[in-house]
Length: 155
Length: 82
Image (cartoon, rainbow over the protein chains, first blue to last red):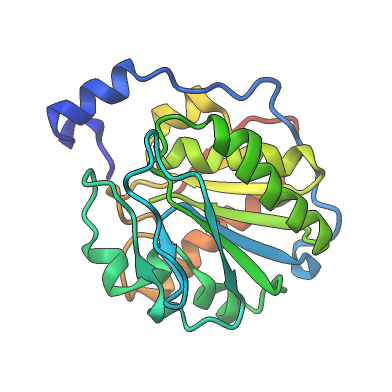
């Protein structure tokens, strides 16, 4: 399991001293229809990019807060790992992007899906622009698409 | 960081009336950041759905995360994957 004691000292110190943002108040939106009928979108922060799009920019201070749209028709195996973090083993997600972008699993489960999903690169130490700019922008797109629920996956 | 990022994104979505469910790999981070609904999974960083090419395990984790969508509020709701 992801036991913090197994992480490198530098990472452990960072996790202990980093000023984690606190969501307060915690918003709560009830699911509007039965799960079997709900239209669902995936948001992954594993830094996966469709092969025809620009990778995330590792030089952005505080972390690249931009996002990529992933069409529901994508071949998941073609997603490219563009995540900058060295704190985890990239081998699993490179072998099988479903590990962090489980679109094939939603297909197998017969889940009603949105026509697009979204990908972020989650190594963002300065999340101001994520919270104020890119996340609201994606949220508005999900509202416009009539999405009922979102599955979010970090890495 | 990734756990915080998905939590903050979830909050913006939830504020606009759409239900969210987050998988989290670092329990302490979820406790501090407080996403509305979170499933803590006991896997290593980099392996949020358990194992590559293990479709059955991945489906179980996805199903458990989606099941949280039907829970009653208020949040934060943090459930351990069993």
